[in-house]
Structure formats: C-alpha cells, structure tokens
Image (cartoon, rainbow, N blue to C red; front, side):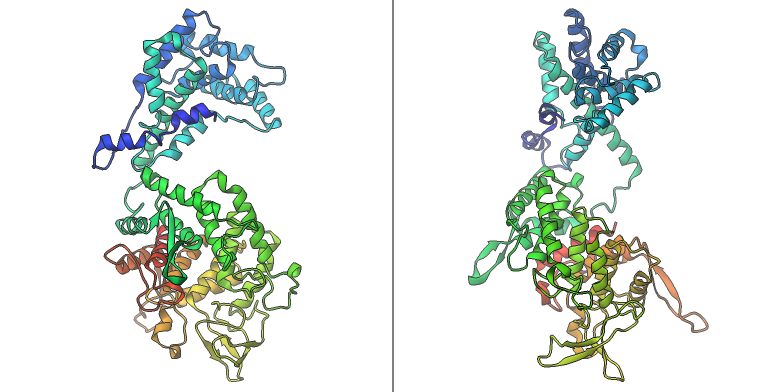
Length: 591
C-alpha cells in the first residue's frame, strides 16, 4: 500500500481530538453504512470532472488510478455493476485497451488493482484476462499492492476500543469536501486513494457488524483480566518495567519488560485504547533496542531473557522485529548442547538448553527455547527439535523411552550422590536424574526423580512443539500423569517429607505452563478422578480445564488486581508483577 493511502488511514494524530469530543463515556462504534455521503460525492466529482475534461477514464490517463476507482465503486455501498453503463463502461474499456502482450496492465500495482476492478465488475467475463494477469504477477514477484482487501486489512488492524472505521478516513473525508468546493483542484491519483480509503472503512465496518452478530461479547477480556491489566499499566513508564537492583536503585529491566509486555498484550488488540496501544509500542521499541550484537537481550541470563523478549516481540506483530527475531533464533540454536558444542548423544545434557552458553540444560529453559524457535519460524522437523527429544525423554519417568541411568550429584545436598534411574508414571522431572520435588528411593537403593506439575506440563508443551501427536506413547504418558495428579491448589508431585511450603513453589509459573501446554496439545477437557460408583469402583469425569482454571485464578486475585504467591516466594513469585503476568498469560488461554 502506498504512503498516501497509509497516511489517509492513519489516525494517531487525530485520536486525542476524537476522544476529547466523546467525553468520558465509553465510545460506541457506529453500525451500518459509514461515509455514505463522502463516497457518493467523490464519485460524482470524479465522474463530472472526467466528462468535463474529456478524459478517457475515471482515473484520467492512469491505469492504476482508474482501477482503484472502479474497484472501490464495485465494493462500496452502491455496489456498482455493469448495469451502471456509461458510469463505468468507458473506464473498463480503458483498462482492457491498456493490457500488455504479457498479460500485465503495467507495473505490479496497476496489474493487481486491475485484477480487483475486473473481478469486481465481471469475474466470469474477464476470467481469461484475470488469469493471465495473475500469472504475470506470480512470475514477477507478486503484487506490490494487493488491492482493496489489503486496505480493508489495514483498517481492521487499526481498530481499537476507542478507534473505529468511522474515524479512520477522517483525512479523506475532509479532502472530499474540499474537492466538492473546488473540483478544479482534483488530483486523480490522490482522489483514487481517498476513495479506496473511504470504501475500505465501509467494508471493514460491515465485517465488524457481522462479527458482532456472530460472536459473543462476554468472556473476551474479563473484568478480572481488565483489573490486572490496569494495575500492570501503573507499573511501567513508556512501556518499560523497572526492578530494584543492587544498591537499592530501580532500573529498567529487559526480562521484566518482556514479561510485562506479554501481560499487556493478552488484552486483544481491538479492545485496547489508542493510549494503551501506544504504551505497548513504546515498550516494544525499547525492548528491541536492548538486543545485543550476538542476538541476546541479557548478559546474565541470555537464553531465558531472550526467550521472553522474543515472545513479547512476536506478539506485537511488528515487521520491524523480524531481523531481531532471526538473530535471536540463531543465538538460541547456538545454546543447544549438541555435537557442535562437544556433546555426544550418550551425555545426559545432550539436546538440552540452559540459561546460556555452556550451561547445564534443564526442562524449564528448554520449553521456553523450543517455543522461541517455533515462534521465529523454525519447523518442527528441524534437527534441533529431534535432538531436544533425546533430552526430553530422559526427563520423563517412562521406562519405555527413557534410557538414562547412573550416578548424579544431588544439587540440594553437598557431597551426596544419587544412583538415578527412571520411574514409570509418565510425568517429568527438571533434568535427567534431578527433581525439585524430591526423590523416590527404590528397595535396591536407586533414586527416581519425582515427577511434578510444572515440569510435566513443560514436557507436554515441548513434545507438542516438537511435532509429536496425541497418540504418541510419550504424550500419552504425560497426559496420564496430568489426569492422575490434577490439582489447581498446589504444584502437585512434591515429596510430603519436604514440607507444606514446597507444594506451592513456582505455583503461578505452573498455572502459565499448564494453560500453554493443554491449549497447544488441543485438549478441551481433562479426565480427572471422580467419586466412586455404587460398587466402590473408581470413576473419571470430564473437566473443562479452561473454566476451572479461570474460576480458580479469579478467586485468588487480590483487591488491587494483582496475584502473588504468598505461600512460597521462591523464583521471584513474591513479586506481584511477575505473578500477575503469569496469571494473565494463563487466562488468555482460558477462552
């Protein structure tokens, strides 16, 4: 789309004026036909001046301008067709007369718009011309200007909670009445773009009308989510989140900004106000500027923070982020513990990714990394995912696929060595032979790292990202553990001997990964243990996990809109900002 049309559609400078005119009440989108008078008036001015000046077509000597005017006329509220006769016939003939021997109508833009125009008036009658033009476009790199639907998409993209199609062609509207008063000043190229902008807003409004009739409004962004969103906005400045560092001074932080922007972006784009969107865009711009030459966003925790940053940037859907995303992908691939780093398949760390280069891997970092690789365009059949599967299997307590056994140091007890082996409940530990939830000691003295909630969901999420299907024995094992250990009150699986507090460590991280994993795996319900039947036999019941998780989280929300882990602050869960982001990310999956 050319710069003029973008300018016509852009409203950032006008938004404050519109909002002040609307007052404090929530703005309401106009339904039905908008810009009717402006479209009719502009078509009239274009037609009358063309006849007055003896021009061959509505766009004068320009194929592109003529095609734009015709395309807009065919799709506006009047829906012009061939029955309009002299209003459109000379212009259609002009387009056909300018058809080249190769099937094009000039450059890519003119050809693409002519396809739009011909299809809009007589798709069957111009079938051959359209087919040849499309063939030419395909052979010449596609259309630089796809046509009217691209303009409609641009309008929809800018719709917010306080910005609607009726606002988005304000510049074109003003220009129409200026031409009406002084038709001799009409610029046909500018007029064609203005008409496209007006009609694109008409079409977009019709689409929003249909969506409003088909889609329920409730549950899109709940009051609890809005309350948390509003609180999160108070914690940032220009989209940037700061944390207290060494020396008691607060400083902007890339990791927390990434999670903060993720939390803010859980609010659907169309529901955000222009001010809210501007805040997010400022934060994205700042975050982009934090990327270092190697692709990382943090020196201390390069993998973890880079993964969070990529998640926030991807959500912004900003084309300017693409180079940064590719640099981040290369960085993450370089962190994987594989042959290029001196690892062999027999090594326990093989296929894993840790907090940074040369770091021991773990499942927490790995599931974030695999998500980042997929988000940046790496296909599931890439060797990075296949090698990650080796590590994933070794964290899973599933004897059929876990080939890991041997002596490992106990990270929680200095000088102690564990003779580790695999269990068979289908759940997952933190990394091969190690679990933050404790161990099950077998009669032969071997230790089985206990499966626990957050890592089992991380495993299911990772398996899904790596392309495993629901009938794979590894996926089924994880799902079985989840069903047998379903719990929202705690992060299940820890050894009771470790004490009550351990059950709550990483609780909000657990909620986030639970929602991501079940959603990605396509599970609508979870089979959980039910009440015994009349014969005392065990039963199961289908649980809508989204409804259950939403209800549970809403019941835990503080009066100010935040969430915080008051029972175990380990892993920064004593910070309302982080727990609130985790909760919002989880709730987004509870559609």
